[in-house]
Length: 264
Image (tube, rainbow, N blue to C red; front, side, top):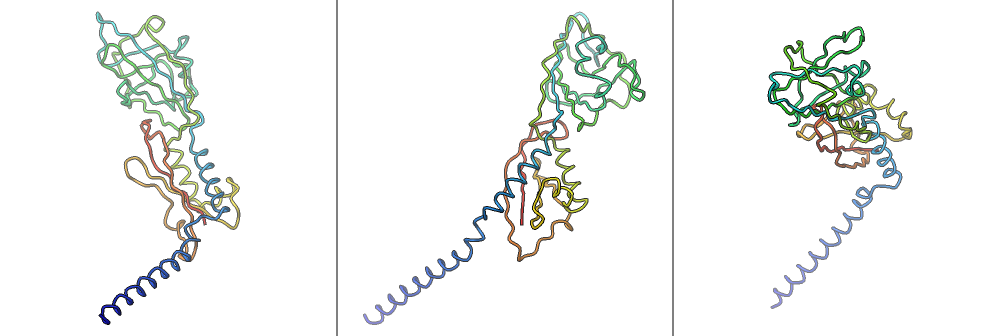
């Protein structure tokens, strides 16, 4: 009985010591877990500013609908006049090199311009869009961030469309609050150029603090600063925040990624 009582006492003492150890470790770790208010404010500042800089401010989207003619079906492509029609409110000499056109299935399609010189900024005459359907629906995307996807060779033998009678041009929608992946890459390029010095000044970040950020794309790949810019001492307290971001990828498909911002 005496031996049993001793074992019970040893268990109580061991358990008490374990609890005291857990409390002690928590008291040490807790300050590192909680983000100081100053750093929390910097995280919010960084998050807001980077998101603003990743927006495609001039992204415009419009839908065009071509009604088919069963007696004269479309074969390989359609041709539509631009000058003097509804299309000249969408496609201009200023933006013709910054367009992507997608079909109703979301696929990017080839297109080309005829009757005008793309190099000398002469008036556009017609737009040729590769298509093999009767009733065709297209979305035109414009942004200075978009690189045009005109076909490498001119489309020929396209069916001419009577614009005034069969085209339905949707309202032009400006998407100022949409993030575009190319601008995220631009931010990383800017950061890598001087490890964030210029970007830090633009944001108005305090001189005694630093930051970095990365972006996880929907396909699982992560874009982040070069290793020489991401060196952080082990003794440095780093505070981080992760948040989901909806963005247009290079094919103008809406996807969801994740941005991580860090300050120290």
